[in-house]
Length: 435
Image (cartoon, rainbow, N blue to C red; front, top):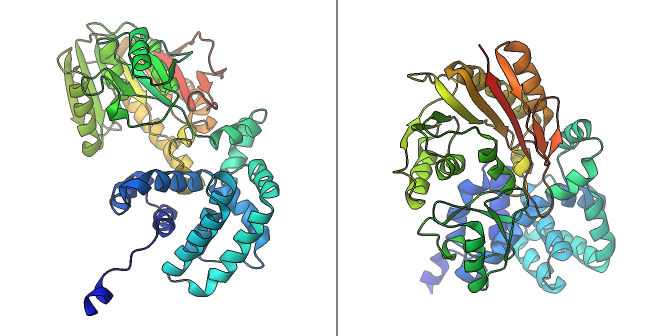
C-alpha cells in the first residue's frame, strides 16, 4: 500500500502540454525543452502533444484576445491561462470531441494543483463549446501577434498587414532541397512517387520539393545517403544569388546549422570554404550535415567557432554569405514560440549586432568581392533600413540589383514575405566591394 503512495502521480497529456507552455512563457525556447518533455510523453501521444503545443503557441495571442471578455477579472495565473487557451484551442482548432477536450483540460487544472479554479475553466470552455462558430470567427479575425509586433508590421507593411497576420498563423510547408550532386529533382520526385509519397516541385527554387504529407524525414528514401536536406524554399534562393564560387575563397559568416554551407558545396567547388559560428554546439550539426551529404571531400572546408563581430581572415576573401542574426519574425510559422519569446526591446539590440558583424565582415572582403546579406526577418529595421545605413556609411559598397520575379523590391535588396503554402519571410541584399 505505502509503495503506491510514494509513486509519482502521473499527469495527463494536457497537463504535460501546459508545463511546456509555461516553460516558453518563462523565456525558454521550445527546442530547448521539447526533447526532455517528449521523453515523458508516451509514443502514441507524441503527435497530439506536438499539435497541441505548437498550435497553442501559434494561436496564443488570438486565444488571449477572445478569452479576455469571458473573464470577469484577469486570472493573473500563467498556468490557468495556459489551461484555458489549451482548452479553447482544442474546441476551436481541432477535431477532438468537445466533451473530451473539456474533461481532459479540467482534469489537467486539478492535476496541476488548481482544483478551486476547475469550475471556472469548465464554465468558460462549456460556453465556448456552445458558441463554437462565433468564437472561431473571432479567433480568425484576431491578428494573433503581440501588440508591439503588430504595430511594427502595420507600419512596415500597411498594405500587407492583414494577409501577413493570417499567413503567420498557418503551418509552414515541409520543403526539401535535393542534393543534385547525387540526384536530380525530377528523378527524386519519381522516387517519391514510386514510394507513394505525395510531393511537388517548388516554383522558385530549382532544387526544391514540397512534401504534401507529413512523416518522419529520416524515413524518406535517400536520407542516410545524403540525397536531400530540409530547407525552406525562400532560404534555398541564397545559392542562386551568388556569383560563380569555383576556386574562390568563401566565408559563411553565421553558418550553423549549415544549410547554406551545404548548398554552396552542392553547387560550387570553392578553393576554400570557412564556416563560422559563435555556437560550438550548433557547429557540430554543420559537420554532421556535410558528412551525411558527402560534401566534406569536395573542397577544403574549415569549421570555426568564432565571433563574427571580431573575426579576421588570414587573407581577403572573394565572397561572404552573411545570414545575420535577426528577430526571426519571418519564420514564426516554424517556430511559434518566437511570438512569446521575442520582446520589442530585442529589435534594436539585434540591429546593433547586425551592424557590428556587417562592418567587421566587410573589412575581410577583397575589392571586387561580393557580400550577400540575408535575414529571416520581415522587419524593415533589420533589412531595408539596415542596408540604407550601410550604404550611407560605406562609400566602397555598391548594390548589385537582384533581378528576380520573387519578393518585393526595397530601397536596397528584395523582401520575401511568408506565404501560405510557400516559403518563409526572407530578405536578401547583394553588395559588391568597389576600389
